[in-house]
Length: 635
Image (cartoon, rainbow, N blue to C red):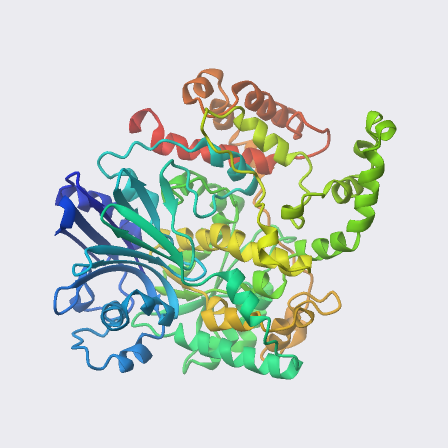
């Protein structure tokens, strides 16, 4: 686990400047660093740098940038290739000098070319310079566990695990892309390939970028739509067989992720996913696995006793910490430093706290991320199923309400809210993304009129027909795997864990587990209204049902209380006329009225009784980020 950065440029960047870029990611790799510059054809220079968090082969032999023995290939790399030992056996003719997976990447490339990535089972962001081809490759893992940004402009490319190294690169202008802002305000994150800056992109999950002669080309080596379409042709139609195969794949995935030369543990919330991962880890360990959980002082939110009960049953070495609202509030100021692109999922705060707790004892932690998206776990999937059943009725209601007489009387707007949602859900490409009341309109209005030539992204993702799936639940799950999972969930965990130099590993997102999940009939995942049915069934093989089967309490950071209390003065500064006019990003009049209306009534001036803390929090986080990187002291 590390951070990488570098460039391919004609404009000179000194070694000291490259080191400054690299050191902005010190938290991602405090154990070692390396920076090197090489000549390239066409007058280019290649700069490669890495910050190292030592996990495998803790010796200096794991230092990066790493070169092939014949000096043809140089690599910097962030992540883990879990099956590197199996690959190493296939590459026995290569003269290995280390026992780390980085050298296996080099040997694999020399033998199989860039198609070697098809063989890597892991999470990774790779930069590879091939002197024979005079080409640089950037690669990102299948589901986007590891981040990889790149700035491409005027035939030059700069890349990094985070935005900070790119911001620190000489010549970077940092022009904010206003076209992504409405979507960010609504979704609370920015999904690949877009970023907050013009000409800066995130390499999409499962993609390879090739830079050669000033041009780039990108292709996908793993695409969710294609993998699903192929796997669904070969379903495992016997439930017991499906359960047995999934169980074995999960056991192998956990086993692979327990390979480390440093202390390893597991997050344990007491829910199905983390409990199952922990149970499999405990089964694979000769001593009690270290487990970590946080609880909350508010009893209605506190699930720590459930995690403790699971830990006691499994026999893990359990540590828990009860946190207060003040503990969470203390992290608000640090959000833009570690989430260096606007990111407003407030669950980032408790995630940072549990990562901090785990890092006190371990360097690697297993997580249960991916269970909800791949096995139908979110409540929205129930709503989606209901919406599909009512869609024909909704179309009829919408048709009647658009008749001249009814339209003139605005009948549709007077219908109950749920009926309005179903009736208004007529866009074919966003059928599963309904709801949210006035949020989409407000998000667009906050940004106002965009400069000429700026492409405004819609707040929803108009891509659903590409999945070619009639079942709305499955379609929404695939959409979430493409957007919400990498853009929000995995980004949240990556930045929260790396804040404390902790590596988080996700067995449920193993490539074989993901691909097999598409062969499991949907009825085994959503069985008579029972979400995640088959995953729960496997969990019950290890943990008594009564320890897991309970209503989820959930937890929400008290945003409304903070924004209208301790953060109020800071929020008001962000809607000051002078500040907004100088900033020239938002519609000054609309945003000022919306925020002041929200502070008075909680409704943002839109509809009495509705609380707009979520949208206001997105705005607050953006402004906090802006002040950090574009305030007066950063010009």
